[in-house]
Image 1 (cartoon, rainbow, N blue to C red):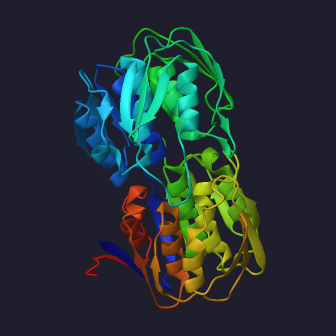
Image 2: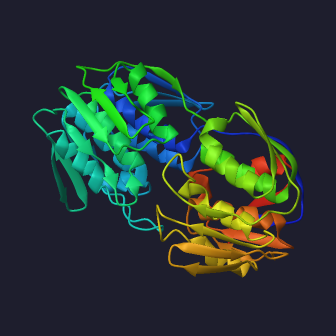
Image 3: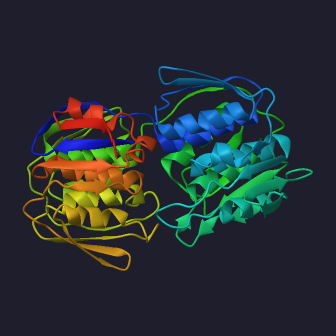
Length: 421
């Protein structure tokens, strides 16, 4: 098992290219199951979650080819069953339910299991499928969905913590081949939903309203192959924005969509850092000292929950007291205890982290508990005195393409080693 060792105190400078979005690529790859014809997807990031999705597509019978960030999928004849040994490593594997249901009117997919940032059920996915006239059952750890025919209807997918991004995409994919009109109220408005809708539209789907809380899908008889480039990963971009603010002098992010990052750039600007924002590049001018900020995570276009841990790392060195309130996944504070091992002064009060800035952090052995927590610990290591060892970095490989190499390219002293323990 690998670990990442960060030697703190090195300044970051230069430019870094942002990879394609993991959270766009996964449902887009699943959507290739909706047609027999070949689909070509560009800017697919090299991540473990992507590898698992390609394995699932292959297991289902699709022909998959990958070369230099481009994936070609042809799902001429596919199975409708995805067993546990295939899907267990990745929660997003449930997004094959929608396209299989849409095309074959049935699917059986094992539940991938729990998540360390709290319970993330698929109840809203099943609510949407039922609204499309599908029967849904959970038996022996498997989700079974089936219908004689899918019929469009109006549904509300708003959950207790807001809209469901994966659920919106899953239901939208099934609805593209349903009879009549489907209206999704309380839809997720994230850019990744828009990206999926754009790909489906290229395949011949009729979708309006993606990017708003109300999406309308007029069902069609069949979909065809298409070619598409995945949008830049706004969470990877946000992570490098924080890295640049923490340890940078002048760092430029290339291949970004600045509009998708408004909430993050506003927070970093509020923390006292100067930014030069262009359409597809953002430059951060570090000044070595953050100002206190009070943040509340919200569904898009609010501040993203996937950037909460990284901002905790930044604010741990702020000149004053900050707060971060988590409304999407209230239990998502596993990184706090590890940051405190490095000297951060953070107190949890329910779903709010109260952060009192300290003058220095110290390197320490720390344990990554999830994808974004692992990124936060690497970022903290950049400015900590001494050496920080981040263990269980398989989490970080789920969502960051070569983060260690990209940070080294900016001047960080960082290495990946095999853990002999």
